[in-house]
Length: 169
Image (cartoon, rainbow, N blue to C red):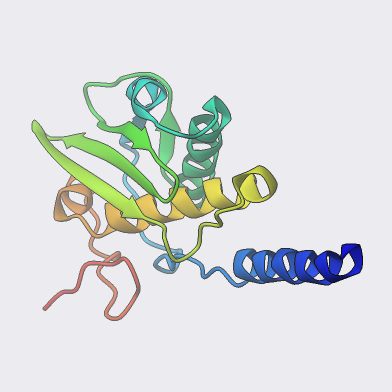
């Protein structure tokens, strides 16, 4: 009996690893857009209160990857509010979704980054990859918002066919 359980367990572990490794990536637009010097305040206080089913580390990991991804596009991400900038307030981080509110020019829009295509159910093993995936999903949604483009005077983000970009049609 013991010999018949071991091969089955190996198959289950192997299938789980294939599922985790085969996860897709959230596509972002190409780098090189002209970015205005307006600061982007990243507020994560609400996400620490509103996240369910994940360790506290997940919010911090998503925050880190958001900062890195936005900085790689040239955005000045800050931890202090500025009257001249925009605010991205993380509302909640779930297993495969992250929600946030963009506040710019007196308007607020709630966005949800859906990362089902690239998050693994094995959070204990793939936490960093999942956090990166959640951050990329939110950034892709953020770049698709006309309010975000207007707040940062972007017109080069409107690249035809670029995933997560706003079409000029």
